[in-house]
Length: 349
Ligand SMILES: [Zn+2]
Image (tube, rainbow, N blue to C red; front, side, top):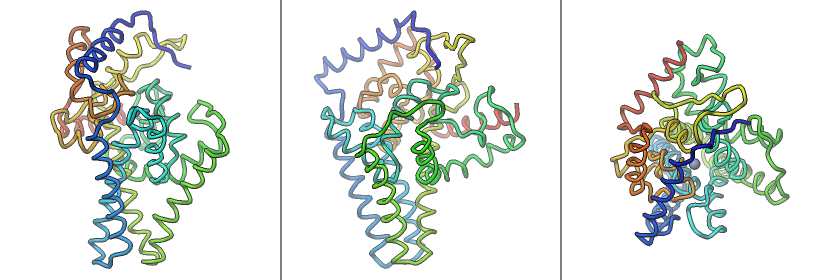
């Protein structure tokens, strides 16, 4: 198990003090607010209306396919804005609301039980290390120099978008089951599920299969599978690219532990080094991506709801400057270009 050298935690302690001071002075809760709840209502009702139009309102085939892509995009936004915060426990101060909103991942056909372990624990603790399951797609993608190089990696900057697109299907119909049956995520054992957690897992797969595949097939025949593919590929691509832009760009650190298994810097410093913000000035990107364009703030303060990241970014940026830690932030276009340049470099060197 990888460990961080925590002998000097001054950056983390100082930053926490400053951020706590901000919340105390502004008399704000660190959890979600009415803006987040309004956004949730907009997203959930948009999903409902979109699905209804696709399945129950007769229209031209091409419009149905456009709506399928829109539904995929809406699912990814629910993942970024609602499920992600709720799974971290930051959506609401009430535990049951976080649990209920975390189940939006079950609506998407995935397991929030497995996500909380894979993302909250493994990705947020071991960011960009060999143990990080969120950014890795071995053996198809090579993003770290310590990963074995295969002949096809030199083309990975060409085929990565296709891989990103199929990720959601792979997640719903393969990796969730693999983790469920092996009871492992990478090398990490998963604590045993309780009976009702098994029930939620199977119900979500059944719900997804019924609502997203069986009911549309009843209405459209096998052509429904084309609509499902358009929906799932759109959702997968958006989810993957947003997560990748935060960690797999030029300049991001991919720490390797020494022979004793220790990374020679503190956890908080490493969170900034392994992470990059993008489109930080864009209010639209912030609204759409649920603050995942502010991943530095998210990684330092995963228990603070994303609606606060724009405000605390100023505190984080100035603390990083004082402590001499590079705070990486790119415009959207440059972040995308940097990601693909990095894939090309990793596939060729
Ligand atoms: Zn997170």
